Length: 180
Image (tube, rainbow, N blue to C red; front, side):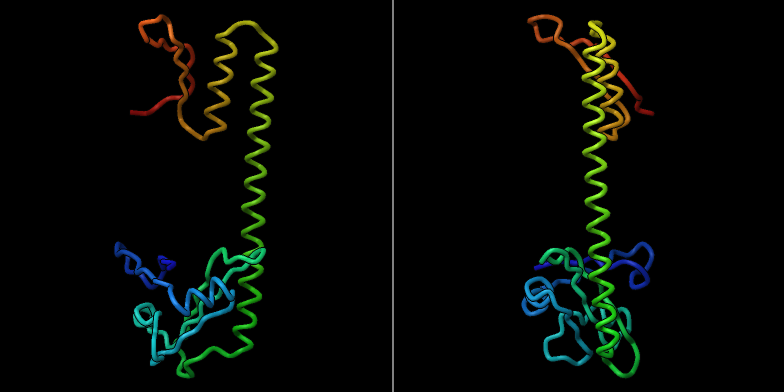
């Protein structure tokens, strides 16, 4: 089963978005066959009935966003015209759009992941430079906490070093702050 929260005009402000449960033929069509799935009002086994009634749609089409042989997302289209079904040309155009959107999103994700790896590599290089440039432990630790805040996207980092065998740890370096 796959649950999709729907947001936007179908949901009243402050209300919980309805869940769309995909199972059986719906899930098989979208996830396994990677083909569009559509329903019209009055179909024998409607799985989109709740969403269609909320939107007033006469029919709904779910389009898989396919990248490298897997469904990475789903686009839903609703039509409330009296004809009760989208034309095949409209569905073909929507499928092309969903596949291009899937590729664009995948590329954005890969780019973001690569940027993160570059940022991590640069941070490690900077820490290595700091370690090699001085023997002063406090300077090295200051650089490490600064880089950690930037790299981990946190507001503060502190390093505590063990001072004795009793298990006490004393602050050795700190960067950033917590407002409250």
